[in-house]
Structures are given as C-alpha cells and as structure tokens.
Length: 173
Image 1 (cartoon, rainbow, N blue to C red):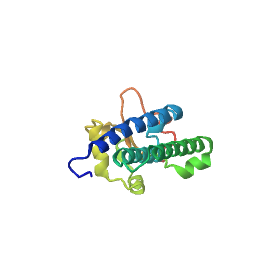
Image 2 (cartoon, rainbow, N blue to C red; image 1 turned 180 degrees about the horizontal axis):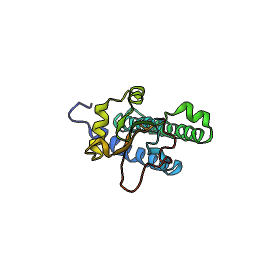
Image 3 (tube, rainbow, N blue to C red; image 1 turned 180 degrees about the vertical axis):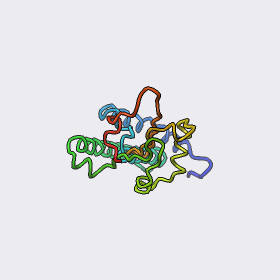
Image 4 (cartoon, helix red, strand yellow; image 1 turned 90 degrees about the horizontal axis):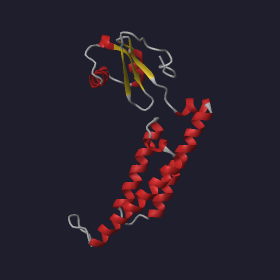
C-alpha cells in the first residue's frame, strides 16, 4: 500500500520504467512528425504541447494508466496537430477560421488604443514587454505586435533601416 510520503518500491520501479517507455515513445513520435511538434507557432500548437505534457505526467505518475493508451493518445494529438497544420497551410479559409491574425499594438511609438481594446491587452502589459526588450523610451519603438501565439514582439528603431512592410505581412493594423 502506497502512502503519501513513502511510495512502495514496486510503484517507484513502475514510475521509472514508465518514464523510459513514454519518453522513448515521444522521441519516436517527434522524429516521425518533425520539429514542429513542439514549436509554439500558433495557439493550437501551444494547446497541443500542454496536452502532450499532461498525458506524459498522467502516464508517469498514475500507475493505473497504460503506456499503450498513453502512446495512442500522444500519437493522436500529434496526428491531429499535423492535419491541422496541413489544412492551415493549404486552405486560406481554414487558416483564417482557425487562427488569430497578429495585431499591431504600437506603431512609431504610439499606442493603437482600438487594437489594444480588441485584443484585451493592457498598456501596462505592453510596457512590461518593452522593458523586457530593453526599450528605454517609446520613441525607440517602430512597432509592437501581438503575435498569434500570444507573444508580444517589439521592433526597435534603427538609425539606418526603417520598418519593412514585408515584416508586417499578415499583421492586422
């Protein structure tokens, strides 16, 4: 019988072998599906990564869970993610339906209040990201973009190069 302080040796051995088995399975799945499996390119990728982590934890920590069941669940999530990504790439209507477009939050040092409101982002959050990006004054900023992943990108001004419109491809103004 396991208690909450001292697990039995049998449980510890199961956990150890579950870790080896499930991580071997995830390595094989990742090698088959490619590096994008854990890339946070969209909010769906982020959700998939969290789901994979949750499954890994459930299999390792719950001795009642089957490794085969975990492997099928992991494979199913990665397969669905691959189908989702394929459809996003091949069908514009699916891409616009299933993903958020990046949104411009600041341009040339000025906040775009309507976009901040649309995205439910507070000015204080943007200032925090500016500090992270080593911005000392708003005048140093060419643009700030809320990416489709939820990350905020800060584009600094440069003395010799302006903001290329190509960089803002897909960004809603």
